[in-house]
Length: 456
Image 1 (cartoon, rainbow, N blue to C red):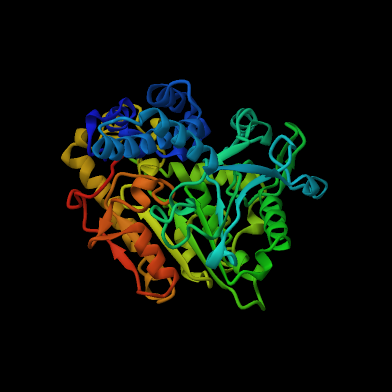
Image 2: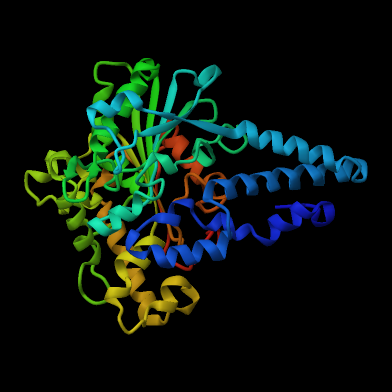
């Protein structure tokens, strides 16, 4: 990444700690049942920094690295201090402020603790002035009173804890180099504080917790329509992890908001293809977990009726049972060896009391032949789940054979590596959205892809 390692201390730090880019921010608070182990990982990986603060720091270091290297090559290293000042200013310019949906509180569109929902908007410009990306933030779920109460002490349950400014990167970036096809669009991130992928609508009298994700979704979209999105020429709904699942669940609802308008509407789900898979004990850990969420948070009435008319509500919270009937064009971006699913669905601690999977699920090189075969079977299930979906020319696919989770919002994975047939994720999504090419990319099985940025 740095051409001149000796150019600056920040450059060296970036080289030494680039493993951060392989650690998605979304994983910092995913499954509340594992918050203790996640807390340990956070302390190990990022010390005292919050995730967005660390991202700002890394971007600052990256800017310092590149600029210091270039200036040292041109000028013998004489302008280093000025470079760092410019880099700090550049990071400040990248920060996107929060807006609270205070007017929607009376309509019940609130976080779990009753605080207002919120979003961040970076306005578009030029040719992108009438184009919109709406990103649904991810961050796991909660399935009982204890874990949901815990989340009200975080930004995933209360807007009191949300960062007042965040950085947009990857598909949300304003950099034409990083994000050539969407950089000048209106880019919105709707913050996630309901813990059911923006799909629940309930109130728990015993705990005083609000599960109003569906109301947050509807009120946020109506608000965005009122401030300019109604006149959009193009719109793209995106999300990662729990936000990726939300993008799948709400894709047709998003399209319906633009009914009668001449708007190109599509959806992108990143790491949202959660499978109803058998775990290492022969059970179905994720199905049990999802069943609790659906029941506790009143999700069933808001699931796609094309699924609930013949399957139970829990089954309809799984994308594999929804995607074939989505009418709005949608692109699925997923790692075939999704690390969240490996750690929390296939080999969670409860399903592995002997800890036989302990090393493997955190380090692929520690997996034995039997465990690799189990993971290959999981990949086959994922590939099989999209066969019907891929038959539609309007849909898109990018399933790589990486051990990853969330790849559209990190600069290194969005417009760097991995690739499939030499095509990056950013180019694949753009070609699909703008109709430049049909994209149905499915990677060969592990370990064939040497372009991966693996987390484990």
